[in-house]
Length: 161
Image (cartoon, rainbow, N blue to C red):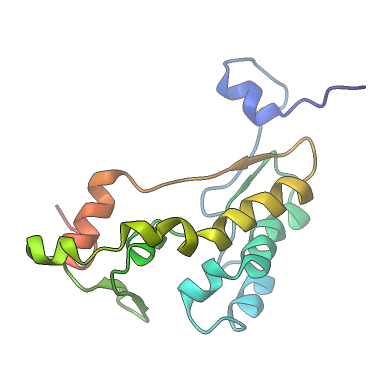
């Protein structure tokens, strides 16, 4: 059985390759007409992230258009506060807005025991993508830094400091 080289992973290990691996920050997104069309099918941005079929499609679209060595999982760092039961909305022209946690009582309202069930569609997206992306293509997942997510949760929006 032939081993397939994932050039992106090799580069992370410091192994040089020619040409170097290519991927794009913000790979899926507004610059793609097919993304714009797909986006209209979701009720809102979180619905887009949680609908596995749409998230898979948004992840795969750039791979169909460009010769990339890695796919970036289509999702958002704010699915975590949403999965915890915190109100999260993406407002046009304003960005993400959360109901701020202002005291210990607000913390006690977070639903830690429901997180895994709530994130099941994201896990399904990862599972599907691991089967659908080309064998030579790496899948990049991401997470918000704890401080970044905490700022959103406490301030109700992204901080400027």
